[in-house]
Image (cartoon, rainbow over all chains, first blue to last red; front, side):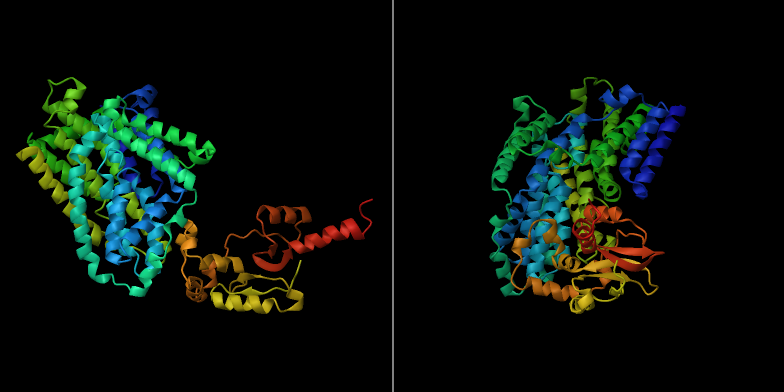
Length: 440
Length: 153
């Protein structure tokens, strides 16, 4: 019993410390993890090797693989090429550029991580807005939000999806069949909505459009050979993801294979690439997994799951809605990664409570009544990040860059656009989930 | 060490600094100076500003971030000059300065200059700049020692 209190205390203090942002979250995660071990909530073997309680290496290595690929790709200038090409496609028209860049950002972000996508599209956005002498802030906000939306579409697009896929043993195509359709709908609504929100305020002098049309996007490519190699390897990797089930491999294998292949053909010094991997983020994940493992072991998650079921009385539609909307608002305020790390075992415990006779893991995790819950969690946790400035890292990064340009984006400024857009997207999800999983 | 040198206030504008660069280069005994010590009203060293800092400020930050400088358009350089000229020197100057003390030895000075790739170092005593030591002075010392004096046999 005392273990429950100790474990819960470590967890709550760590969570509060992470939210307060006074100490770097990775430090807290690692410290919290070691507390779990030192106070014997978990033992080392459980922390390192338990599939249920320990570090989820599927997630860690999938992220590593994709980080390697994007690290090699980003210096080739290919993303700048895409962004400039998009602006020219939009014929220098501000509102058309905004919608085109949003769609492009969302598409890239479905395969590569949101923050890096935004970091790659933003400089060109600054360039374009400077050339057209228009305010860059609406573009940055819409790109950040678009990256979060796009990232929700695939298994690899956003860490919450990767984490859910690992714990729920889902496949890449599961996400394509269940989430991509609603994300496409969300993006269509998004494009129309931002057109309506910003359309009137963005006017440009016609002669400035020539500055955009004269840009030769081919000059953005700094390494044509590596660009071709990276694009080919990325393409093969995506094909690998699409067909990983018939091929008989799990997603992480595909990610590592793609990374390995690109490292081989890129011909660069490995330590150059490997030192740019976001180790801080990965160690945060590791510490977090151990901490969550600790509270799973002491039974805190089981208690929370039973509370949640008590609220919804076993009504699965109500549970879906609760998970969707609660996740959305929670994720708007707190980091969605610790949230999803906590929710995954919670959903599993809910399933165990609801169907105690189903003991085979696959059968339990994939029970048709449970599937909408997973999708609600994924949609809510990923899309919720758009609600406020602090909801997603992409938002924070964009605000930081904007401040450097002398145009600070305040919490309220972002939220004024983010919150309505987030609610719009979650409403679309609500209707989708209701129709697809409960009506039909 | 040179004891006569130009200083500028942190609140002075970049335009004023550029003007001082031009004037400073006219003075005979101050030939070759293209850096100004930024000293606050109380006389304490706040930073240093060179033409390179101004050049850096002229390049839009996003172009520096992402190799996009080849996409600059006609007139951008001039426009950025105008944008930068009224900024306070404190926005652009180097704040993290490597300094030496009046009694620092020549090896130490040479080592610092090479490590930080600078051609001048402020000589600071009690937070106040009392002089500037130039890399050229070290060169002169080398020439003097190796060629002129009979120090090395």
